[in-house]
Length: 225
Image (cartoon, rainbow, N blue to C red; front, side):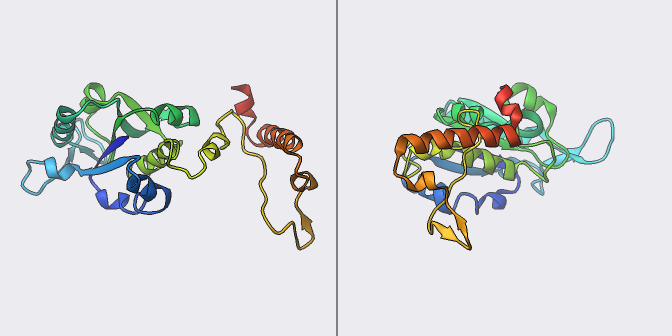
């Protein structure tokens, strides 16, 4: 998979992709992640990428020209399965969306900044708009990092145990059950005996029951879905 990210603050994306699973996924050639500075496509003297909004109002707007130039260059080199804009008013990111995105070959992600981007970019270039929550960030970079992390870990070969991703919360509309590790007793708090029994069938049934109970208690909306 190849992921191209367009941003005006590329430094914000250095850390999320240079450690742990994301770094190993790139080292193993399971994914290529390229970060493009939109300022490089500005023709303004001082590399400005924003301007006042027509009609007045607080906040600057990302200009259409440098964004369009960057997208045009990239799309001339390859076909993108999705051109995504990270925005608070996009569709809410969920596991189903992550599963679908992980199957694509090429994805382009545009990070918003300031008051937003010129609406014509959304109308003529963007194929999908995603939000990671009902709140506003300073820019779309951290949201883009969340999306990339959520989909890259689903690519076969990225995780050491590929079955791990299949048992994550939300994969089957249930939250994950409680998990424990050694020691079996700590400060008088014991690991449930069933998990120490070695009875695989009974353990799986216990996990299913606990997953259902936890979902019913904490996210009953998932059961409605």
